[in-house]
Image (cartoon, rainbow, N blue to C red; front, side, top):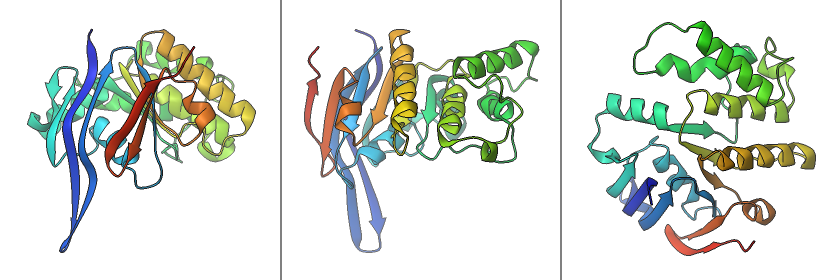
Length: 232
């Protein structure tokens, strides 16, 4: 079975003077290609730290993180940036849209960090338009974030996460603070992406959302406290 990602004895410590905060205390998880996993746990359990490390936004204190066959700890910053941009799409809880950019320009942002750094072509622009259409925003291409609802901003973030055709989608509370209809739209889209073969790793505190994933991982005190498959 091909692995999209693996973490082995992963530890992350934060040093605050004489105090050591052990956010992760030896985590071992395999993420097979095509997995759809929900990571759950109370505040301070380590789930957000784990998601940041999976996204290569931070480096572990010790342990191994294998992403697309690469040991993240061994990569230089430039190499890590390129691997992250090519293999991972991020859906942030707070959207992280650029306020002065239009919908189309926000979707394009990851394309500016490609390996070749070449100019955008009509193929790139058409892909962005197609993604906007896929998430139901084809009539909003020239709108800026302040002109969109929260659900629409989240859909811009999803389109942006897909623009480089990543293998792994990392979603941080993708339905948090969304009404039922918008939350359902987002979950249906994540399920569709998973059926296409993408690996989805989703942090959530909502049991009904976690039940939509094929597997749940429960974090407590920086460790994996439990893991299972959702029946059905």
